[in-house]
Image (cartoon, rainbow, N blue to C red; front, side, top):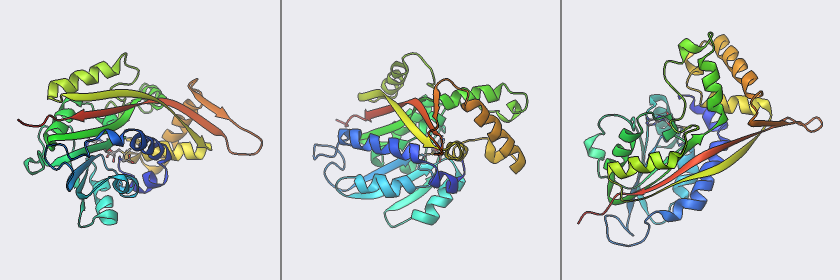
Length: 284
Ligand SMILES: C[S@@+](CC[C@H](N)C(=O)[O-])C[C@H]1O[C@@H](n2cnc3c(N)ncnc32)[C@H](O)[C@@H]1O
């Protein structure tokens, strides 16, 4: 995903969900002065899949209690990291390229963070176990993580339809379907991974969420902003791809479209969001 300008403008759904997560779950993290590195004093934060950086700077950081003395935003996309550094780098904030599912993480970042966040990113990651192992490594002992990502979304049904379309299937080399989409008991799968990588205290919760897009054009741009295929297409191809995508989406029984008088259509999408809290145990 490398369309920071479009994402900056068309990410109301992600922003609303991320705000909800912060309002409901930020208090779960260890902000108190209990034993452990950094508790109660200045602390370091990592945000995985920081994207364009706007949400981190405008929403996340201002809501953190106490003194966040170091904020590192990482993203696998070079374009996103460049954009975030150009717009938001400061004395306490930096943005670095990192794929959270890579085999190794930069040793200088290991055991460096009191709190790890990730919003709207981990559903892109196929190597879930590797990603959670890296998150564990990046945390200081006694540090904790709050992660929010898609479990199920009707958009993935369209990805599946497009992947079987002769016109588009050769562009869909990677499987973009979220790893827990329509899985039975995804919480159990995730809890198993968290336990295997060493987290001792954890919570995996599925939240039913819903978002209304005001106008088909807003929905189209919001989808385009996070679509991994369109940026590899020529402009006319991208238009045709999005036209086909939109034709399919309005047909889905899980997507509700209402039009009242001359107002733009309201398109309601229902989906499930994973909220994960995990604590790396303190060292004896
Ligand atoms: C939808 S954006 C979310 C941005 C921001 N966290 C927010 O909530 O507005 C997802 C970001 O995750 C990044 N991403 C996808 N896979 C990743 C991976 N394996 N490691 C790190 N970042 C990844 C993408 O490049 C993209 O910038």
